[in-house]
Image (tube, rainbow over all chains, first blue to last red; front, side, top):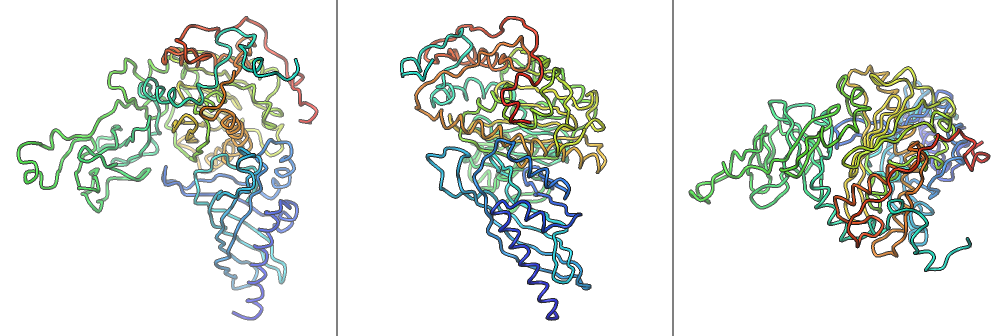
Length: 165
Length: 433
């Protein structure tokens, strides 16, 4: 890999980790700013229970802002979720204009108001496990998310969540 | 009245018998065990859908009143149910949630159910067809022909749902058990084959009946921003609740205005056979099943009571088997926007019952839980819960408002009255806007 290719690969990694921070801190607008106008987000899984690939959520770029804007109008479990992520692979396209990356992640939930606050607030629970399969547009030093598939391995999701991960 | 002292707090409410229940029915372990015996081991329960086992030798496992169940499709294409228990030493014959017996297993032959422990093998009709070293061990004292699995009553009904009953002597067929409650949706479900497209589960620390209550009453729609903006019109308040024998209830339809929600879209172009566009029927089956035919998708909730204070709820979604790829994707999107684990409404509903579970832990102080809203059997009338608990009381021979007493009839239906009008009755209207 050329020095330039190595540098771009590092920028892709930094973009993924920056997205994790933005989502951890619920900086929804900053996360949207990392996404291309054609960005598509999905949460998928394979269910061993019914032996099918499932899609749990799909959001297009234009739906992201209204989706987040409506959150305060919904009753919700405000327990913050955070991710521990490790970028496993970054594959740059030969022309250097796109990249694919696979990132393993765990989502933990800091219990706040979701169940029984006097008992469980302050506790962290494992919420779900998955891998991000990301596609990027690369233009020199500028890297934007073109697509994110959050492929999860958890189907016991209890109350679920309104937060995007 | 100001906040109440203990005597006032625990006093009988100013309502009639049948309009409230005692919280011990949601928390008492003895009552829970009795429910498993008297209700859950007697009722017909749809445990899965035929599309979960589409090919011969496919299987699905489940739990019903603590009993392990296996459902298999035979080479004759017939679906049968058995206890998932080896008659030898009680090992669970199949450990996976689903799969196929067509391939060979480490301990067994293709096209057989095989207990991995000692390799006893069974065919898809539950016959024991092989006991390793049978003669050497049992001589003539025991023969495999007498060692079949425990067969269970099983019917495939209403759009391909697989109903199972643990009671061999049940006087009901599935049709007589449902007692007309499914009539409002059966044409839509039966017109052409359905296919499952969604599955996830929740285990919530609350009594199973609290989820059934939530599915049975719509007064909690105030909790959902989505419902407030898409539904609270005159048509919504004209939805009628109907009670049926055996504790079932259904809620009539109206037209949902999906376009009023910013992230939703109209669903009128994609619906179910015989269902007008954007309409919505709900059927709550005693003792813990819910069918929800809404616009372009069917949702099916199955409750599995785990303890007095814990329930597993499995959520399934269905489209038509004939769906094009685009139609299927649209159905999935519509379903998940509201009912998916990351959708808008299901999360809120589950927060509601989790909070009830907190206040009704086993051995917590008994409280009065009110089911006394009468609105002429229209949408916010709590007749669904009153009817459920009246039937529950008969099955249990306990009085829901004082479960230490024997059952007696309470008030289920209130006075006739016209439906309410639109959003003007919503106390949080300003906040919603």
